[in-house]
Image (cartoon, rainbow, N blue to C red; front, side):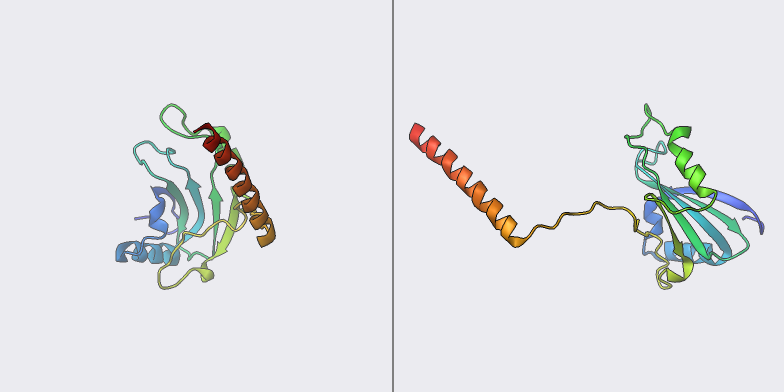
Length: 163
């Protein structure tokens, strides 16, 4: 319904980004082809009352196809809800970074050309996020198991002595 050059932001369940039904796929295809989907704001549960699920806000402008989409993962560091709503301070970093579409630990950009042209799946994972998992050697793991087994054997021996 937007006229060329018209801008909009839509709040929708985050499952819209990856649903495989024909309607969702068609809508994502149309959105990317006819509009510049420049920003996706990924919101935590409780951001919008009544939604009950995680939501995203899609920011777009009609008239030109999407070339690049900037994603931001909102994390206010607390649970949101009726008694603890989202506030301006929670959005300050998003607003500052969105002006230049800057990359950060919570934001990244995706070229539209890299989106799967069969599904138009937009559920891109944060390439900057995730915890670094310390990999242990098999020897370290076996040593820990042996130590725990020894401790368990001592406890069992004490229990047997009591019985």
